Length: 132
Image (cartoon, rainbow, N blue to C red; front, side, top):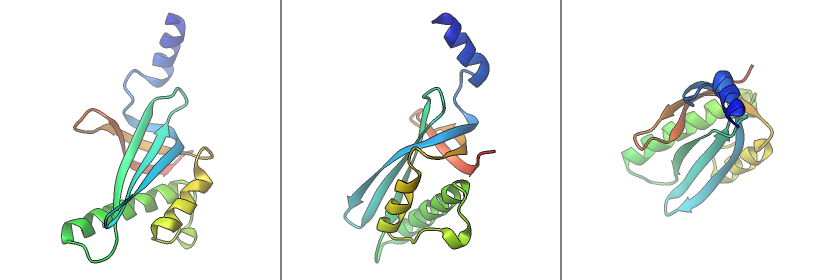
């Protein structure tokens, strides 16, 4: 086992941060009172995981919620472009449209992700781009 760990450390490093090729492994979408919460899940080839938590608010919401939704939609657009979609092929902005689009890619695509540690020490993806 020590040899395997040394090989993994040599190939992938011991710190799962920075630009990494990550596979889109799944998502969790849950209804909220005024929108949805979305958790996007990723892992590299050796199982190290990272995620992104997004909030999409619907309807008449306070400015802070509008800003959160804008950030979430920008992050989703970045992810869909990393999946290879053109602007013309982007899914609609409703939770149902987003869910349908994500379903098509779970387990089927890898992207480059800029991995950082959040304030609780979890791996989070701060930026997406196309994998080479």
